[in-house]
Length: 133
Image 1 (cartoon, rainbow, N blue to C red):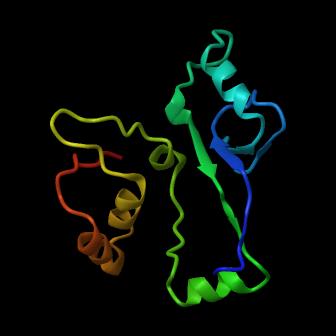
Image 2 (image 1 turned 90 degrees about the vertical axis):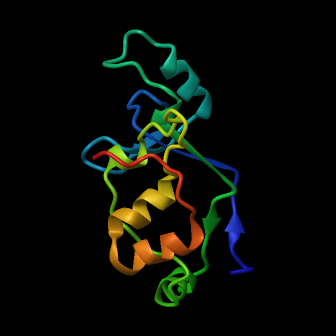
């Protein structure tokens, strides 16, 4: 809605060493923290694995809804909630040969199937590489 409030930069990520981040799932997904720490983590050889830019998702101008607005928008099917694994969320989406990797929301709609895949077909053209689990 028009009355939504937007904030600055938000970050969803997999790196436990980012300062001021909050763990939001048991399997190690984090929200927030200092974005500069993302760059530091990508250059830190002491971490349990090498982190890349694909391990961090940045959201600019995220939206906060007034009480009840999001529930109404969900009921009106403005949004389609989905439970998605962190493997899908943080999958590398680099170019794959001559085809582009499937964009995140396109892949999620396809995985949801049924009417969601039909909606995806209406809005997105083919030409994406096949997804792998």
